[in-house]
Length: 443
Image (cartoon, rainbow, N blue to C red; front, side, top):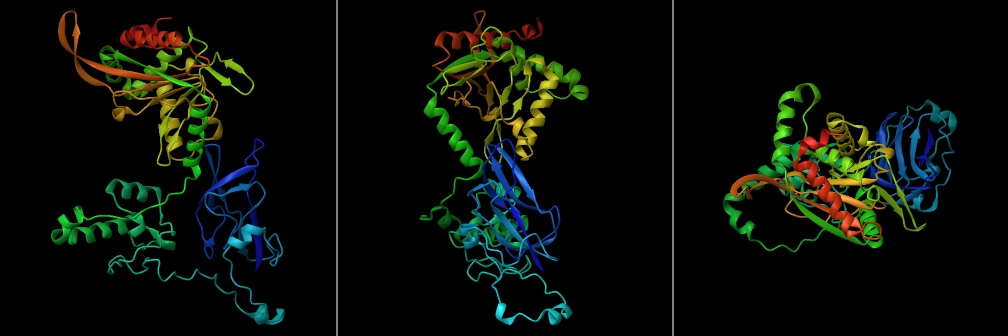
């Protein structure tokens, strides 16, 4: 048996440090070639690290949330053959201290000739933790009531975590029956069934029971990047927000007609590509808004190309994929690109260049958009256009009270670069295009 050392990969672009976001294996696990071992993150791009060999995990070189240098020890595998380092080679300080490896037994080693005749020993499996509350019995067995230790993080897939969140279930208290102690959908079903069984007797008491539990959540991975980005934006940029009400009745009627005619051939249109087109056209008269401000150098760079950031909510948090050259895309091409980028962001497959380089951002919460918002500018840009939800309200039109579809735009600007009057004129320009949508197609 030998040791194969895997180092933190070089992500490229001169990056010296990356954050360890998630381990997919634990000491004692058997792995095969190309199996994903860990997720690491730089900026907002997540990279998966695969195993180049078959083997068994001997030790892990870092903890989730730790920022590690490129080239540092990531993981050690026991492999058949010589491996790529000597078996007794020491690791780097903290990485080896945190590793969970098989204890050395040099005093009981057999002579080489005798050891060669012995069949290889199976990989050592991690010993069970008595007080973890995890059960390895079949799902039909009685579910134990013991909870995990507060410091022990429950293992579950993103789909299971989302379902538990939707159901209001604390995964910390759900016993696991999956491989390596992972919580499965079956475990959630069993937990729900158990709660339902006792609801008749204790339902009202449980609903009004006092609670003293606490939960500490480490801000790591994408959440850490979002926190740093928001803090940097608010620290550097003096925001001001301008809100305008827009009548989108005609725009929605046009969208319905376009979808009725072309949805089958070209795809369905949402409001976003229409909004994107209005922004592109309005920016022709306000080039100072399609810009990025390097406040360290004191330089504002105005762009002819509109690289439109479109904020997308993912399970991990907010990400902003970029529609390149939005000025060159028609409605359906823009809609297809927005859909592709949003799916890539939600599935964690968005590349680094798809998440950077935007010159202005469009943010929408869809049906949850509320009446008004104060969106945070995506530093180092100087503007963000926020879309609130569409509601049907009574409006006085031509002296009569009629029902119209109304929507607010809540947009923020960097007051160092954009004057209030120009910001208002820019939004009024967008309003003109949206309230008379035929103008979107007139050059």
